Amino acid sequence: GRIEVIGAGLGRTGTKSLQAALDILGYKTYHFVFPEHAEHWASYAEGRGASSDDCLDLIAKGGYTATCDQPTADLYAEQLRKYPNAKVVLTIRDSPAAWEESWKVLMNFIEIQERPFSIGYPSFIQWIPFMRHWKTMRGLMGTHIGLQPGELIRGWRCKPGGWLAKQYSAHNDKVAATVPAEKLLVFNVKEGWAPLCEFLGKAIPDKPFPFANESSEIQMATKVMVAVTYSWIPLLFL
Image (cartoon, rainbow, N blue to C red; front, top):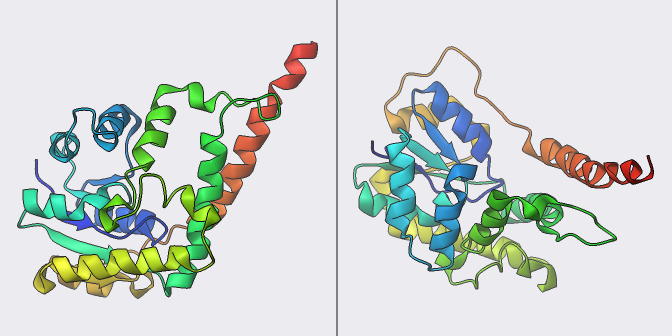
């Protein structure tokens, strides 16, 4: 297998919508990191043996022909080196400030996932191997623009307002500077099918462009995860 479309946009730029759109267009799209691949990605993030090529080979061997979301977006250059005929779609938000606020929503959910077990927060989530590997793997995100491991995921909380927006712009600027113009589409999912299909040489489907409301889903998932964390405590008194 080989990657034909590289989604280079950071998380919270409409990557779920892009995934759904690419699937409709006939691609098989890899979004985020599957649990069964998490250990490889964690090994790569920590420099423990696995390489970026090893992680990308897992994707291609699975028959996937497109990627989007992080951490694959952080490896857009490695993907383009490995698959030089691929096209790159850089999904963007309306503004850096809009992305910053959306990123914070996701990070509040991630913080709940990554919080260790304690008497005050009796969560077993980090006892699940692939969840631990995901936590390690997230350290990779943002290192391609010179950030320290984990800084984009956790370190932003001690940064001034606007810092996250600057990292978003730095990533987008780097993609624009390093991907040949004829291989790059800068794309806001609000634009719908026309620019995406023209760029990929595909006919516009006879169905609406798929828009995923990720923020509401993430906020609901955050509430559910907290509720589940505490739900087992009454069993102690049965």
